[in-house]
Length: 101
Image (tube, rainbow, N blue to C red; front, top):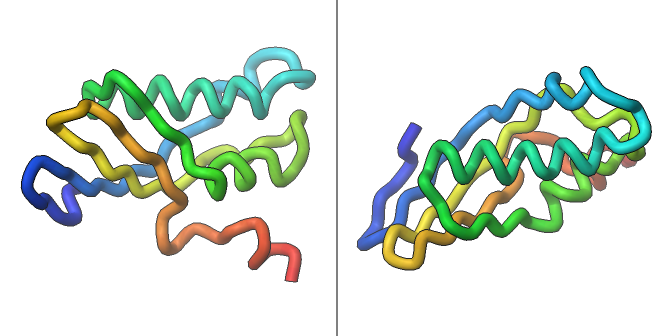
């Protein structure tokens, strides 16, 4: 879903399913979830470089390495000229700080 399109930039929201990381070993699921987010964004936006925001990384790692979330809602800003995608946590998704308080 395209939220806005400025000159050479797209902003989209996606729900990325992470259930596939649960198929393998428990000991590196969060690492694989981060790799899966990169792969998903590169595939859907044809991005050459994917920059994952700190809030997305903290959300994936919030429940330790063995239990990442099953899905994550993200907002992606894509610069068409430089082919760089920046991944951030979507507005509706809970951040780690909100969950703890």
